[in-house]
Length: 392
Ligand SMILES: NC(=O)c1ccc[n+]([C@@H]2O[C@H](COP(=O)([O-])OP(=O)(O)OC[C@H]3O[C@@H](n4cnc5c(N)ncnc54)[C@H](OP(=O)(O)O)[C@@H]3O)[C@@H](O)[C@H]2O)c1
Image (cartoon, rainbow, N blue to C red; front, side, top):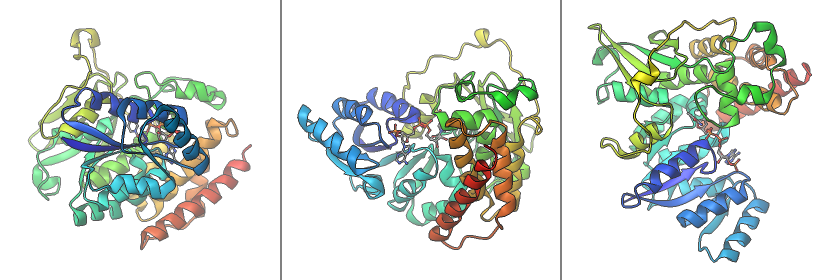
């Protein structure tokens, strides 16, 4: 029986994780669940799973949850804020931590799980984008296992031979092929992109996801963040990573070897597959995902991404080449720009402009510490807010 904490349990990945866990009550015990402000959602999950601890992001929400739990006689303890998240990420009786908080807010709780030596099921790609070097070093120091949840990285993990400390080249790998659907605007005429709405940007053709990652998919910043994530997870230089547009989202990614072999992982686009894989690894468990019907799929298409249509992808490649603080600046500016777009304060096409202006304004440095990184993140947010304001 493995004890599990689900950070961000009320989100898209959190709900899918609980769906898989509920199929295997003999193998997993849900020990802690967390949300930002969704008190009703977390209350319903506490009723269903009776975790030991639940965490809300702020005190008023925590108080409301405490009262609602007491009213229903549910004995779950309620904590709040970052300290609460770090506590449930590192609890002694917890074996596995699903890191599924969205954005930079997920970094410190995920890092707490890493420092406690847990198996970390990493959905929060922003943690690696912001602090990849530190995150991977801490995982090594504390013996934490990092299992990727992003479907692409989970696919690559499945197609690679065991790590055992060797680099990609020593394992005969020539390159990684990261697939991308191209999102809802892959074929939209470029002038029409100026006026797209948040609802249109969040209507992904193949995946149901949270709003932030849906917008990232529409700009292809999501793929850019994934390039940086793959760079750290698999110790792959950017020139060993090729992005391939594959509109059907059936091949989740591929690995090419020096002998010409190309291994791919395929499946229906449903995040329960990588979640179940990471929970059970190296075993396999049932996930609730139906069989892939190749006759129904019938064809698989591939295209090179158009960097004029998707400037965010170019910016992410430039950031990984620049190294140091550039990915953290890119991530912070993107979060600010996406939030402004979702609030209808910024046009869709201004998202890459805000990110580019922020990257051009701030110098690239090598962050010495976590505090240094958080200061860079805060500074980049300030610059990006100004850049967004100037485009209203
Ligand atoms: N969705 C996917 O298919 C998918 C695929 C691959 C990777 N990912 C990655 O997984 C992560 C989660 O994505 P998602 O789509 O599941 O996001 P989501 O649906 O927006 O859910 C985010 C979760 O984080 C919580 N949260 C948000 N801000 C927080 C804060 N400041 N402090 C504490 N908790 C906070 C939310 O709580 P409330 O519900 O209370 O707001 C919710 O539980 C992202 O990093 C994303 O890039 C997602």
